[in-house]
Image 1 (cartoon, rainbow, N blue to C red):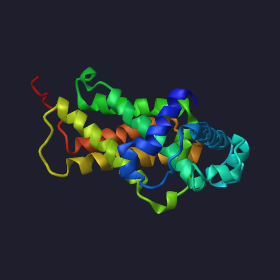
Image 2 (spheres, rainbow, N blue to C red):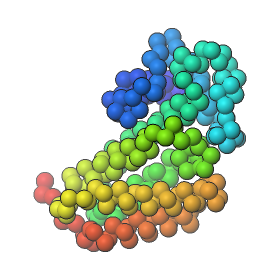
Image 3 (cartoon, rainbow, N blue to C red):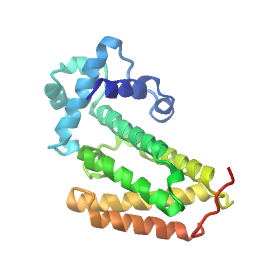
Length: 230
């Protein structure tokens, strides 16, 4: 991990308002001197996840991979689930940042914008297969039963709705964001099926996800949304 990535880890685990809202009290504060060790633990867990089922990875194995004494690891993460929660949180932040950077102005219709978002997500997953594994594999921690995954889904959908609303005159019905959330869940369900069958998100399933995503939303959105006057 680069120094820049470690800065992001610091913000997410200690200072981020989003972290305080979605994963309060999950991570212990660490000093400037402790950041290198935290970085090594995250990198060690990520490396092990490349070749092992995530539920088979223990805190002891991560400590050995990272070269960090187990007693020291508890200063940064209370358990192995917290380490993978941190990695999953970073994955979600990367997806949120991607949504922020995709310029909706480059697309004439909402369909093009939304399928572009899927394409950008796939690029993230293909560039680092451990990210898809942590989200879609069967052998992943339940993060102590918390609602982190659902909360992050809402964050992503809210941002997508905000972008659509800035560009288009969106239909005025009260549960439109729930409609977008269902559409997003359809994509995730298809990606989950692909990953569990093929250990990857295949081109066939990407096409199926795009088709289902747009077809569902066409039940609620007109083929061409009027653009807002600038």
